[in-house]
Length: 250
Image 1 (cartoon, rainbow, N blue to C red):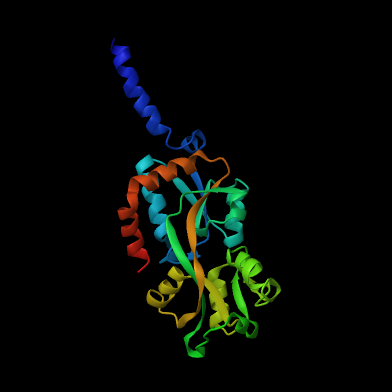
Image 2: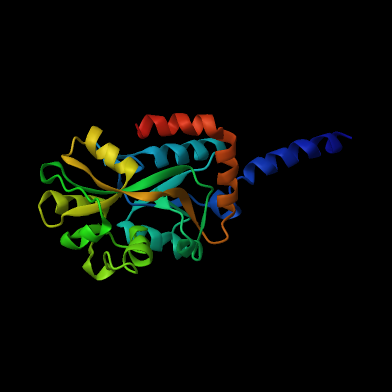
């Protein structure tokens, strides 16, 4: 009888331990990041911080998991998770059909619009997309903006991917903008707000792209960790997520 009473308790313990897959139970979760995407993931005072990290730290605390972060450039981060070198990647990653072919995404946790930004003192304002031909545009290699140029701007003759200047990270594209090497840089709207308020950079919006962008945590294909992370997002609920986002994306 004592054994019969113990079985339900043992099953509960096994379910808790099962929150992380067997692979993640025996090993530290391998996380790939690109820490140049404020406020999602960036470096401050020698430490990594940001909205994405706060969410994932909360997940690991709730599941008694541990993780180790490895920094890459943007394309390297995506390559690490798509190749299985990393269990998960996060740094404000857009969910796209093309990326879904090689990685599994969590449910969206943030929605943002896109901006083309320029230096305030140049006051570049795009009122017609045909004006883009006059300017040099930059963004990180492998970013979602590449798809936008290929599928929207290029077919209409507004801009081609051959004209774009590619950089390893948003930070390097931003430096190129400040140095006068490019005229405009594609960023998420939440990044523009962070540049202006937190970093006090002299940039402003030159054009807001119509539409929106869903962000998610990227997991290696077939990951059980992804499914449990989705459960955690549901446990947080919209109000708590809204509170977290409000702290970082004001």
